[in-house]
Amino acid sequence: MRILVVEDEKKVASFIQRGLEGEGFSVDLAYDGEEGVELGAANTYDVILMDVMLPKMDGLEAIKALRSKGVSAPVLCLTAKDTVEDIVAGLDSGSDDYLTKPFAFAELLARVRSLVRRGTQERGAEITYADLRLDPVAHKVWRSNSEIELTAKEYALLEYFMRNPEQTLTRTMIAEQVWDYTFDSFTNIIDVYVNYLRKKVDRDYSKKLIHTVRGVGYVLKEE
Image 1 (cartoon, helix red, strand yellow):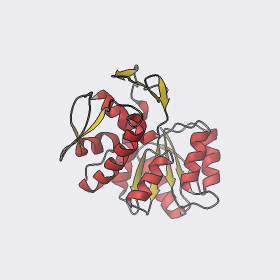
Image 2 (image 1 turned 90 degrees about the horizontal axis):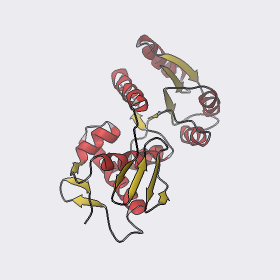
Image 3 (image 1 turned 60 degrees about the vertical axis):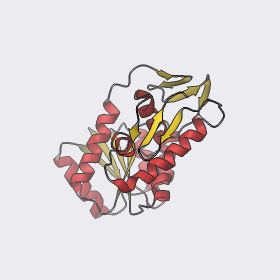
């Protein structure tokens, strides 16, 4: 497994590199956003670790640049910022997960392994529910044959709903399955993303599919 670490603090980068190599990963280092984009686009990585505060090009812009170049490797943001707005900005840039500094290496390793598993899982055939259609290979979604543009995290959330239709999904279940988090304070992010998803999936249609189960969570169902 090959990992790219984009981190301008050389001591931190070296710490991460030594730890990951000790676990059997091959690690490349970049010390600024431009170098990270260059390496990320030129090579195939199983996971990219991207610091947010970088010289030359910040991490969020670097992630956007990589996605625009067709790089689909899972990205884990490393950031000292942990407000809801900061986390949403990171996820909307195209990252798949985030980890707040300072962090324990054991947690970093767990997140990396989770992203590796997610990236190598069999994606399977198209999923349909009502007039929704989701293509797990192309990462595209349609409703009534109109394509819906989703961010990576909105897509992951909708896929979880569509793989579990007509089942009430608690915020804890969603946090664990879509974000791999178990702590209660993360549920505000879930509410934010469900609202984003509703605007794109339900707003222009009389039949609503994403419903709130008060005090519990959400459910995808026809009413």
